[in-house]
Length: 63
Image 1 (cartoon, rainbow, N blue to C red):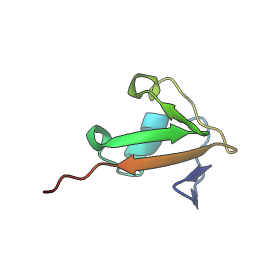
Image 2 (tube, rainbow, N blue to C red):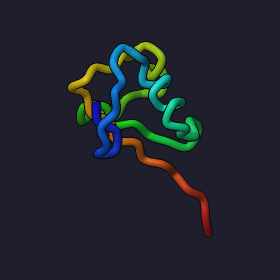
Image 3 (spheres, rainbow, N blue to C red):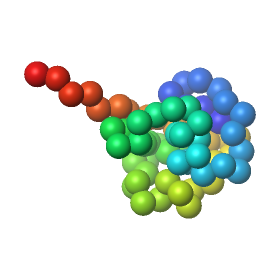
């Protein structure tokens, strides 16, 4: 599967498991999964496959 344009060997894990494995801060991200925004409540029930794409946008604070 692709995450932010990079290929990874994840199949069968949940979206949340992939995000944790890639060490994203789960409280500061939005996930686009196969072209659609994926609700945070669906991260633990959505399983990934080799053909999937995921874009992760991280929010950063500043002023």
